Amino acid sequence: MSLNDLSFPHRHLLGIEGLSPQEIGLILDLSDSYVQTNRQREKKLATLRGRTLINLFFETSTRTRISFELAGKRLGADVINISVASSSIKKGETLIDTAMTLNAMQPDVLAIRHGDSGAVKLLSEKVDCAVVNAGDGSHEHPTQALLDALTIRRRKGRLQGLTVAICGDVRHSRVARSNIYLLNAVGARVRVVAPPTLLPSAIERLGVEVFHDMRRGLDGCDIVMMLRLQRERMQGTFVPSVREYFHFWGLDYAKLAYAKPDALIMHPGPMNRGVEIDSVLADDIDRSVIREQVEMGVAVRMACLDLLTRAPGEARNRPASAEAGRLRSGEGR
Ligand code: ASP
Image 1: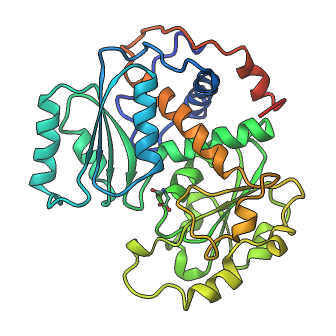
Image 2: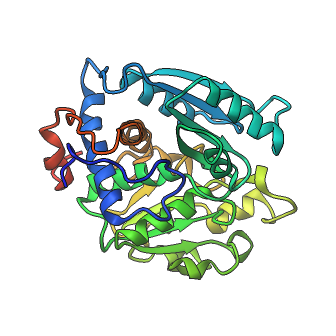
């Protein structure tokens, strides 16, 4: 199957769980093409001309919301943003009513973020259009995992066989969960590195190795993925103090020295400098690919919007990208 005749066999993108390695690979291949589009002076395509994307965000967001907006606009769609974080809309009937109201306006795609795990799936069952999960509670954030995978694949030339350490507040992290599903599906080895209080129970069942010590957890790994302490999801005290947390769990040069010399540092953002990551290290362009992750996010979201709006069997011209194959084989950034 080539990129041109790929039709995505799913109506929605609600999570990485359930995607095959081939489907993940094809999304990444198409995303590679869109990276090239986004680096051109003229970035606007007509792929989604006449289509409407609504971004419905019940939680705050900078990167993801703007990234979906840019992705939609660069593909030529009309894009509407609705931020309801500060409104009185919560859940249950009202949430469904909101989705039904938007549905009546005939959008083609809804990108939804919600604070409750499962809320996006619930809404996807009520509407006629495609739904992309832009993060639901501590459940999944599929486009984040895809952009992380794209960043790694372009830098390392592969995903299979790499050792990835996901460190910090795994318990509250939808990013961690989506990454675990994706990395396992493509044959990477996944470690989670965190104090027991910040790990969900039975995390080993997701196919990860568990470490309660940063040095041992980072030993020999290819990728160090840091997570934010998600205090907004915490009820009670999970860490004694921020200072102590940084001492034991914050990534600095001394702890990074245990990873492979060419290990890459990632963070989904927003970063808490001096809490989970040393500020200088976060900006070290020889080690940190945090800004590149943001760039990849737009391309991945373009690929997802493109695939979800294709009619079954519809072929679309792949965006010009002689570079994509070269980059996939790890020759460049
Ligand atoms: N931006 C990511 C998310 O929405 C990670 C984070 O907030 O820490 O899950």
